[in-house]
Length: 385
Image (cartoon, rainbow, N blue to C red; front, side, top):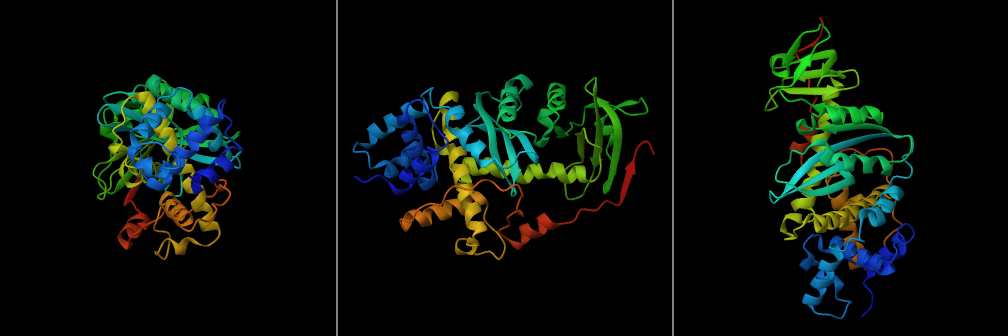
């Protein structure tokens, strides 16, 4: 049977950057990524219609796919990292906002990711799956993901890392300072803070009344971490916020930390349900899941690259009926790939990620109003006052 249209083109392009020891591994990689992009599913059985050029029965297909995801030679270092470096090669010396977060899979496995915040979504930089029954992990368990991210980022980038309360670790903050990364990390209410006056108290005692914000410069946390604290209480939030940062605290500290919500959480949703149905994959085992997540990350990069080209060429409205962009770049790229495969057209040369971040997509006026809402405080107090 003829070689599938998308698989053939991906192999031609990706072979420029990905050079495995065995070319059969590259063939399998391109076949599987092409199947994921067309099936929009992480379920191995859903890939079978797009692998029908191989003259074998469904059970043989699944055995071959199972062997592929369990093969220790199929690694992110060989396949995903060269693709990511190509994708980010113009970012040398630029500013980057990264997020660090975890997500649970079937209450048995914990996915840890460092992602680039771009276009209102997150793009995987480094990731790992651990067999771990909780979303809260120790620093030593996710340090490998951070170290890998350092190796993959272009030289000279200026990094700001955003993280939730589960990463309120002194080891993490020291690691970030050693690597000259800025950081904004949400604090737990029971964290002890030593103020510039020498007084030590819990964060819960430093929260302002509703509608106000407090800024505390030059505080010490976790024995020896010098940083700044910003707290705020708004009616539209479920609870008061307390944010630690190594940069001078201001109202923009809250806006910067807020990018985490629009970036990493929709990305996890894309993995689990909205994009690739990871939860329905029925795949178990940390090593196999690491391989599968590497394939999903590769498919995500390729779809976003296609969407960048669609946007740059002014063809977004062919696929997205909203007056302004209502689809994420992932969804826009998946739709364009469907169109190209249906019409048997060639995919364009994969684009490099632009260093400018486009506006966030919104599919409704309600979401647009929520995104563009200007938050104002009735009073801002800087301590010591």
